[in-house]
Image: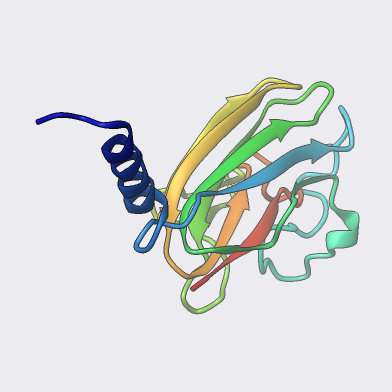
Length: 169
């Protein structure tokens, strides 16, 4: 078979249409995540005030000394990359993701260990412990629903280090 300039152009056009045209998968979404705290004394009130984990009774999020913020709260279903940056000056943080409980209640929490019970919370993945200033990423495929991003270093979740993300059709 003789390859001509014209047949080469048709071949390239056909491949481009197959890859980028009809039926192509939607581009992956990237969510920037900031893991932050109010400094070395951010855990000082741990155990002396109501916990600020998701749906914990008597939570006053205005008192949170740690948190997670994202550049978007709603994303389309499919492949999502969470790029987490530890914006703390001195504290190690991590980021996990779990579906919000079907009843909208609290995540399973071990008060004695000051940690979410990851297996019971159906953790879907994590960016493991990040030193201050470090960045890590987690790429995961999510179905529509509501999910919670949280830090599970002891005490951090209870001090307010979580946020919700909604995944749409």
